[in-house]
Image (cartoon, rainbow, N blue to C red; front, side, top):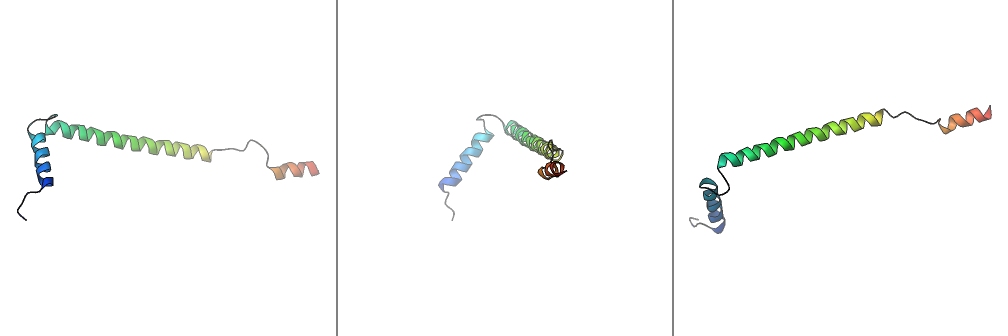
Length: 77
């Protein structure tokens, strides 16, 4: 139970790479992560608005032609 396995070594190496260099500092990585979350939320809100707009357009549909039953009634007279 006290032995270090290969997954623990990989995790330690990744953490060491993040702390001591690599692509950047942790604060910049977290800033990029936060920007990604914000843009994801913005995208979700835009999708909700577009769905609401589509549903409003679908309820505002007005018939352009008379129903078939109405045409038959006018022909019978």
